[in-house]
Length: 169
Image (cartoon, rainbow, N blue to C red; front, side, top):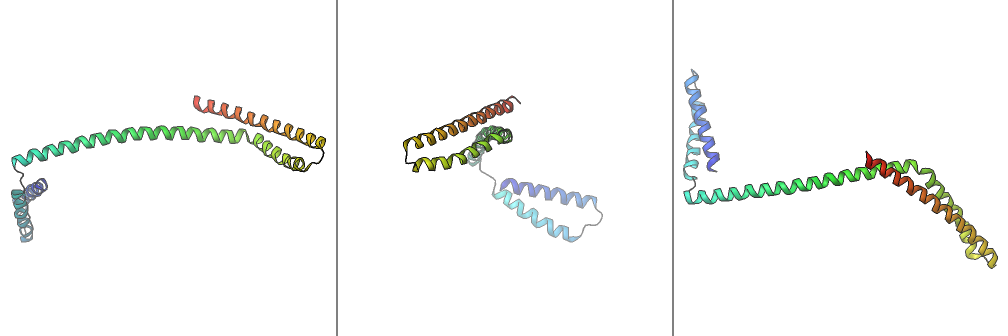
């Protein structure tokens, strides 16, 4: 409060005096505005002057606030660098997924088609009455599962290649 009142007082006084000495005609409105501002800010400045023992407490609290601000700034810088790292890794993850999506689309479509092809065999196996018929159907399901697994491995190889490509950039 004291600092603001001091600033207002001195600024108003300087501007008032500069105007009085440099301008040939000064209206009464300038004086009507400047004199009350000078009186009020002067009184506030006079009565809000901190006592020497309180000034030390105020200075100590300002120092503590500055230290808290510096510590908070350091913490936020650390958090910012952490978030930058997350952002970078998520960007790489998105880029990898986009490349995998593009390059492994045919394998994923084949996997989906094989799963759809497998459904009727699973139903037949569930309701098969003869053990030999059930074994044949289970053998076909096993072959389809092997093809699905082969395609999944191909997708995984593509993913690994894409990861290496993105990490090397």
